[in-house]
Image (cartoon, rainbow, N blue to C red; front, top):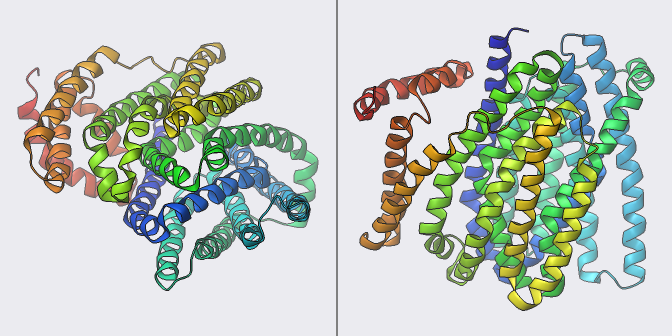
Length: 517
């Protein structure tokens, strides 16, 4: 495969994931305030607790098969026989793990109920989670198969559909008095629907047969299961590291404190929307590049890191300047108490996003044996710090814990990148980026003092901030017009004409603003 063709596939894959992710984010942003207000602080805290459990459970039930399928199928996309056998073997393992873990799950719920570890009021929610888990499992298997064939657009657009169904059903049920149970019924319906659609779509492109399954299990079953099992432990540790704060706050503090911290994590998810899309396609592309085009790895990861740093620094400035007003307006006046923890957690989330990009390249190579000991160490550190800091500092302690743990995690991965054989900071102009963002922060902060009214601030400050930032990025040659044009040329056909038309109108203004030709 030529370097140009590979770059085009990477860009198109990223575009498909980004469109789906951004659309999903837009739906979340629209409906989350309604759900938060309708549930109240106590109800939202309870939902946050159960949703964290769901995230952990899905990591267990999937058993790393999504990552295993997309890795091995991506390495040999032109061999249809191999793809059929891999997909068939992955489906077998997916169904087997689903049945095995659901059995264990039901036994655990029964024992917990018998020993009064689970309230009778919560028992139905635990059973409803099973419906969501089944739908999620089939979605992830189908998604892995589609990723293996560079058909990301067929799966990633299902995320917004799922979120829209969930959000509309939830708000409707809450308005007519459905209560907390409405969220889990809506979640089950939405996950089962997209799970069925995704798997049927994948099945149309792959000939999954009993004979292919037998050959796949004999030929690739051992390697697929071995890699997937490692990814299982890695994904589980990652989810535990991310979700343990919510669980501990719920157990040690209160539902209201859980709701406050959940709002911080919701905003951090908004913060990382582009990173998740980049990480997903980087992992997928790196599997192919490590095998066939190793020389492109450094440029791929360092450019991804550069664009991520540029974007997230701007978002961080807006969070610091407008964060308190945004929390009040978006979630409600009582959530202003989450502002200080939000500011404390921002550096950690920023570094964590960079770590996700680095880890995606290492995962693409398959060097995952370092990850599990490291994950265990930082997971235990997270528990210890939370245990001592939550009681004395409330959710500020949880935010501080997150920043400490994520910072340590990121520096570990920077060292590991060098050991693995690539340089993630090759093309990043740290000094130039710093010189660009500092004036933007100053301008944004001054505008927040002089502009009256929150709504006007939300309109003017981001617009002015991005305008000043763009001028500085171009003049300091952090980003060039040639670089932008290369990205536009590799966009999918459905985006290319629209973006190019907008760019053609903006380019004359950009040329005037560039002082150093």
